[in-house]
Length: 478
Image (tube, rainbow, N blue to C red; front, side):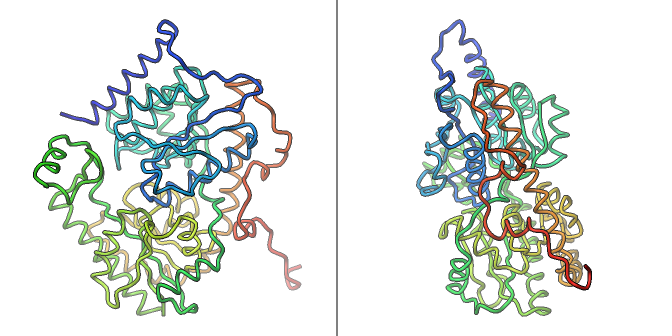
């Protein structure tokens, strides 16, 4: 039995049932003037995934700023609120039920709008259930003629079942995408969309001194250039629901090595394990080559809780037992502060690159899907992207290192040029969101304080603010 398919059909049936509300007189919140707009943020929070938490933090900060803090009441869903404790101070948190269709059916009508806020919004690479959850929430909001916005979305390959569900559920939604490839995919589905970027660019980490303190605790001498490596397991995705595996796990203790959570399990066989070993060996060799050319301090980074397995497996292939920075042990604010001390980063995690860029850390992407490729192509750094699934990854990665190391200044120059463009795109997202609020709720108050493009951004950290300043001309060039 295909449980992903069944979950989608269940969600679809509940949306159809909600559509009949005029006859059934189902209850639901209706926005009226002089009332705060109640928004529900649906995403992938509560797993100590630094990227997911950072981008939602900034989505909430920006929307609160654009609408006006006194005009909005926000709730964010979390798989485990204990793991997001202290995050999202402008919103309350609500636990997302693992079997989510009935939960969304009862919860979404309590709000005036839904904001889908996971980056990997509509794609089958990780879990159809995640995309079904977000599309389902948008669909429930749409049938009530309420606000429904996907914010900073990436759209990739979907199974035919998921694609059909997204197409049907999101006809009344607006999806603001973070790249043009995603817009093209939505145009194909006939879903209204606009351009934008990721929302993590404005993130304010802990003070720089805190990042240095953590690094020194890991053994950094305060002087060496830092090489970050962010491995994952690219080969055990997607996760899928398996009822029989779940029963075997509970009764016989089987399938523990591939259990993700609840009834979900990684798709992982012997061939996948061999490919994973090849990927790790390639990263290990690249680290050794860089160490032979540069006196660097290597740090392995687990951006999501489960990435620690890849970090530990990679550490076994290296000498001197490199330290591991794990998202379970540090907050997102501390982790990003630490990343911005780096000089180089080899990463299979999209947000490790995004959040380190304001520190002008030079990225080399080893990607499992289109996200890092899209990012670095837009930044004119497409020469520094490799496919994690390439059987010749080790050879190609080592061949790329000399170019990577020698072009550090050019890479930094490109980043300095790229980030201001992303900030302007993000500001445009804020304006587009406000316009959509006014389209759905014409009587919602105007914000007279929003005059320039920068006014549509939340407050910026110093290192990001500095990138907006034009460099002063020297006497020689003036």
